Every structure is written in C-alpha cells, then in structure tokens.
Amino acid sequence: KTDWSSDALPISLSLFFFFFKQKTAYEIYQCDWSSDVCSSDLLVSRHPLGGEARHPSRFDRRQIHRKHELMPDRTPSVQNQSFFSWLVIAGLIGITWIVYAPALQFDFVDFDDGPYVFDNVRVKNGLSVENIRWAFTTRAVSNWQPLMWLSLMADVELFGADAGGFHFTNLVIHTLNVLLLFAFLRMTTGSVGPSAFVAAVFAVHHLHVESVAWVSERKDVLSTFFGLLCL
Image (cartoon, rainbow, N blue to C red; front, side, top):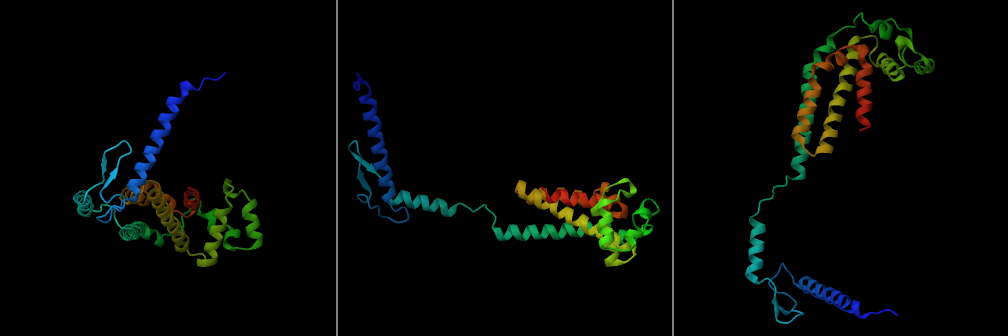
C-alpha cells in the first residue's frame, strides 16, 4: 500500500509557490509601465501572504524613464555602418589599383608565358568547342588547369594578343579577392576596422606581386578567388 502522507507536504508547497508566482507575474503584467496608473489596485495590490505589495510609484517610474532617456545610444546606426563599409571598399579598391596599375604596361616574359599564351596555338585561337574540350583534357605545362586555360582564351577574345589585357584580368581577380576577404572577415568578426586592415595588408603584400604581375600565375589568383567564395 502506498503511503501518500510523506509526499503531501512537498506537493502542497510546490502548488502554493506556483500559484504565488503566477499571481505576482499577473499583477506586474497588469501594470502599465509607460503611464502613471497601474490597473491592479492602482499602485497597491494585495500580497498572497497578506499585507500590501507595492508597485513602483510614479516617482520610481519617472526615475526609470529619466535614466533611459539620459543613457546614450552607443549602437551605431545601420546607415552609418553601411556608409563606412562602402568607404572601406572604395579604399581597398583604390590602394590595390594604385600599387598594381603599373603592371598593365608590362609585356609578357619568357618564363612560362610562352607555353601558356603567346606560343600556345590553342590559347591564341580563343574560345571554341574544340579548345574548351582541350582545356579539360590536356596536361600541358605539367598541370591540369582547365579554368586557367579558359580564362586565358577569354582574354584573347576580349583583348586580343595584347599583354595588358591579361594583366588587367589578373588585377581584377586580385581586387575581387581583396573584397571577398574583407567581406568574410567583416561577416565573421563584426568589426569593420580590423577586417579592413587585414584586407589591405593582403592587397599590397609583396607575396602577391608575382601572382598579379605575371600572366602565367593566373592560376594563383583564380584558385584564391574560388577558395574565398567557398568560405
């Protein structure tokens, strides 16, 4: 036979405090904090255990409102953040092009640019069904790099055999990489300033000079571009 007498007291206390909590929450909810009147007995209500439970007085509420009014809003507006981000983007594009713009006047070099571009008949003929099939099947220059070949063929279609056009594409892709890095860091850290600083260092770092100013290193900026897109 089950003896319920030992459990009666804990159950009773649990129910008592449950209803006590509900009644207190209801009285607080009934109070209109934005006005000077509380609908639960105006400013005084009966406590479940007896006596009077005092709601915040008119003076208390005015002090609370005054405190919130005097507290400055330290959260920057969305409009200001957006303007600053666009300003950073313009600055990153500017410093990237200032540093690497001289490369647009460079010619091809004898080291690898021959087999990649000016001595490669497939590339010089531009985009075609046969050349696209070749790009995905060849291992010329000891690498399987179809996107590299297709981008070089696209340059021939757009700029002809002018080396400046190939350097221009390298610079555009590198600029996109800088912006993608800034966007990724801004999204993951929430900080515009540090993200802009890291992206600026990435943009002008000397290790990228070869990748941007050398046509045959198109594969470096291309792989970085797709790698950043995956983040």
